[in-house]
Length: 112
Length: 124
Image (cartoon, rainbow over all chains, first blue to last red; front, side):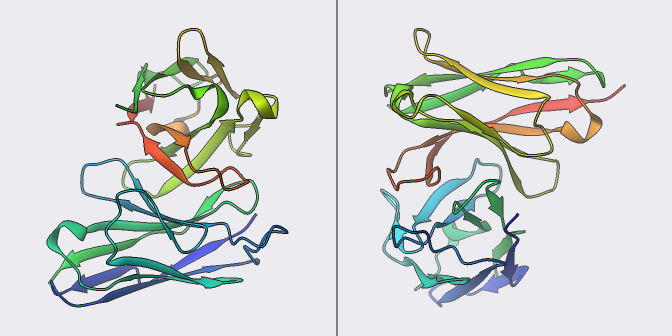
């Protein structure tokens, strides 16, 4: 199984400031078609998860452009250019390179 | 509106069975991968399994922790996907989410629509 490791565990942020979350996989997420199968999800308090980023860097429909994803191989990053109060919650990375699909442990983003 | 609504959760004893339903609306789920995830209380997300679309043969895959006990199916005439859970264990206690793989990426990922979840408690 591919093990996903996120850091930090907790991220206090100031509104208007940038934020960054790291996700590392135990194996490359590059598939034979040239795509990296890495998603980012946000679970806001009391809500179901929502898709933010797929294929490492593609924003899902309706996701604000302050969210961006980057990375390759085994190292990926989610960046929020200017954090807003509504961005609080737990962020998860997930690999879709192979089954079993696996998640990182989550990063809790909260306002300072 | 595209929507997934789970139902069927509840309290069940270890060793017993439970069937969850995911009622689909707003799209034809025949051609989509439908997946189930779960989240134990206070824990992170865990993939349970998925069923591929009709064009991919409707095949299924499962996490090792549920393989042989859980079965995913769907009734396209009713627009419902199911998660049949047999031989329940206390560690199956979780909120169960039904999701849709809505972005055609070439593999089963990018789950863009999630239901509200249904709670399953396995306890004697």
